[in-house]
Amino acid sequence: MFPPRFEYVRVRSVAEAVEALTASLEGRVLAGGQSLLPLLRSHRVFADVLVDLGGVAELRGVRDEGDALWVGALTTHHEVACDPLVRVHCPLLARAAEAVADPAVRRRGTVGGALSYAAPAGDLPVAVVALGAECRVTGPDGERGVPASQFFVGEGATAMGPNEVLTGVRVPKWPGWSFHYERFSPAGRSWALTAAVAGVRPEDGRLAAARVVLGNLAPTPLRAPSVEAACAGLPVRASLMRTAARAVEADAAQGGRTVDDAEHRRGLARILAGRALIAAAGA
Ligand SMILES: Cc1cc2nc3c(=O)[nH]c(=O)nc-3n(C[C@H](O)[C@H](O)[C@H](O)COP(=O)(O)OP(=O)(O)OC[C@H]3O[C@@H](n4cnc5c(N)ncnc54)[C@H](O)[C@@H]3O)c2cc1C
Image (cartoon, rainbow, N blue to C red; front, side):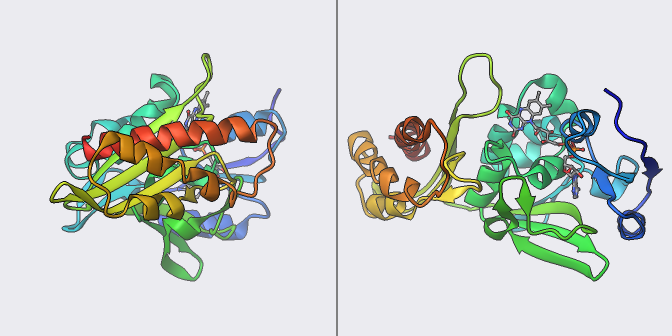
């Protein structure tokens, strides 16, 4: 199917992109096009103007900002997965980017596209929330930062306004912490049915602190405070962490998502959270 007619604008800067969006009725940003173009062709979304960010050099790449890495919105999943700075300072992000779809999607799909698309099953949203990242957004009123924990507001919905552009994400380095990502997707499917990130800070053979975030149990990434509390102070032993992961039941109940296989997903979350904790702690 052909998409309804739209105007195509290839911009050279973020300012031009914001201007083009503001002048449109229902303009949309085009990044890698992996999600947007099929939606347009199948008439599931509409746009009078497509604002192609492909020529905006300032949105590409990864740079070291001291205590954090800056990842530009146009950086592809493949570039993130292979980037030496990401692999050293934020290996969780590399692991999440590697998990996306297949090599073709990873070479075209972008970090900004994946975060803006805000799929509950997305691999990057759960990672940036676990890493306490900040999403940088520019719009008609200037630039602002939105904590990743507040960026995702619903299934496919973000805190961005209609004329705002996600320019990148600032990801803290978390010295002394170790993170691990686990996901499960049924055979033949790329999207995760359920996913879990665990981060731990071991100290003298115990877990001084833990962060756990679950993917695809709720419309947005779900922090698991019960598991985190159950882990605090535990000796680094696989059996104990598996026990702590059972607290996922209490966290999953906060998810507020009614899907047919909710119970199956909660069971998966328990297993994935346990595995992620054990791997992160090196137990
Ligand atoms: C077959 C297939 C399998 C996939 N499997 C997975 C998977 O397993 N895990 C996973 O995480 N993802 C998966 N994806 C999605 C993949 O991550 C896409 O790359 C991503 O969703 C969209 O990125 P994009 O750069 O192509 O964005 P586009 O398709 O160009 O845009 C997607 C949406 O985001 C908006 N947008 C894009 N960039 C910006 C920006 N900088 N600022 C504001 N809005 C913006 C667009 O307007 C559009 O609404 C899959 C996609 C496909 C096609």
